[in-house]
Image (cartoon, rainbow, N blue to C red; front, side, top):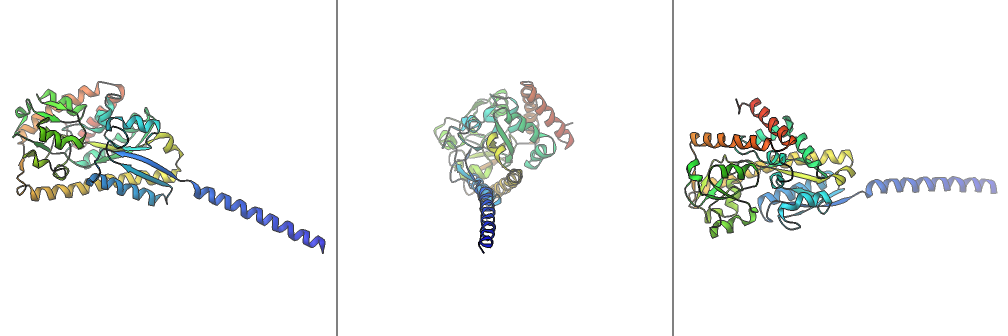
Amino acid sequence: MPQEISLWRNEMNIKTVLLMASALCTSGAMAFSDTWKMQTLWPDGSTNQAIIEEFATNVETATEGEIKIDVYGVGTVVPFTETLQAVGRGILQAQHSGSVYFAGQEPALALIGEISGAYENPQQLTGWFYEGGGLELAREAYAQFNIFYVGPVLWGMESNPTKRLVEGVDDLKGLKIRTTQGVASELMASLGASPVSMAGSEVFSALDKGVIDAADWGTLGMNAQLGLHQVAKYELYPGFFQMPAADLAVNLDTWNKLSLENQNKIEAAVRDLNHSMISQLGTLDEEAIATAEEEGLILVDWPQEERAKFREAASKIWANWGAKSELAERVYESHMDYLRKIGLLD
């Protein structure tokens, strides 16, 4: 009997150890979770910010709670021009910002984030990223800063609110226009305008006070949401100046800690985010068109000959930026190859 009891006890001890080991493994697998701080380039309360917040919710759901993203509006944690460094150092774990803001650190970022006058719709530019090699080039550029470029986020062709009538290239002379650094600012300067750099959240006040005469910031619907028609009665629409590609980027060390499964889920979520941003902002544009006359907004459609002059001037600036670094040259050539492929360049 004592021997049987001893055998029984040994068997129970083994089972207990196995159950405890299994529980530890299970809890270890379930225990991984991470909360990211991500700053965007949008003001709180905007449609764009709401779409990013929806993306954060989708990521948390897709990863079964393993990745939670706390979303902060523009300038909340660091100035909008400093997010790249903040993400690279781990102060922020992620950003949704404009590559062009950091063109001074790597010229290729100017052509990755904004190639003014090149593409006609966001689907074409999205195609360059996913079919034309743009995504790989963007990831190479961001890796220099210890950041993983997950994917592009577009919102469509921007329109330009102006305080005075601007009907062609010649009317740009002397125009104080808010725009981004890089290709856009050099292009505007080459056409006689005076480019001014500032956060989008400052545009309304700057127009109202006469600090600027025009803005290159958002789509027709985005501009309407900010109430820019209250301080600028004209708007260039349909737009053609620029169609930026913002990023969704993550600290490289943070990214590398993720399982391959979660990396794939987040990449898929970013592609969905890009589609959602384009779609929802397109709807916002339609609403703005419907109320333009009632709001006293005058839409100005440039004739094709004026658009052609603008694009010709822009092409020279693309080439100039392509000569600024080895990587910038490869980005420039990649764009040219893809523009020829889709019939936008001879």
